[in-house]
Length: 171
Image (cartoon, rainbow, N blue to C red; front, top):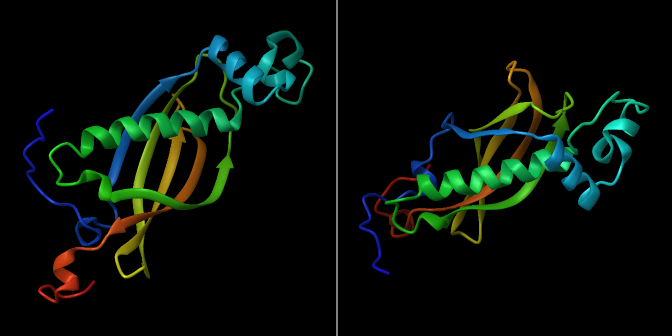
């Protein structure tokens, strides 16, 4: 397979605080909620519409980690498209920590969640003198624009080699 033409590089220094992306949306079905629940979170409110009515959720809801898994799937697909034409587009993206993961509202069959990502900070830290750390806020909103899910993740982003050679000023 022929390598694509690279149209730009993308280094830590090129990533602006405030950069915002919508990864996409996903509609949760009863079938997939039950399948995920049976496999990864076998509680009545994830696996049985009938039994779920007798729980605190008063009905079937998606497992919290189901939302995280769908976020990951949509994020990877989106970033693959976003990196097209970026020289070594894989140099950004290794996650090093997840913070403050929260679920605010239940996600039920038929709900459509839209997942977003925003660079909220560039940490004043270097890893092995080659990597900077960016922090992103990641959220999911339901069809009524209510936030149902959020977390922050710290991601490694490679520093420009020009900085190592002293040809550009620091951050």
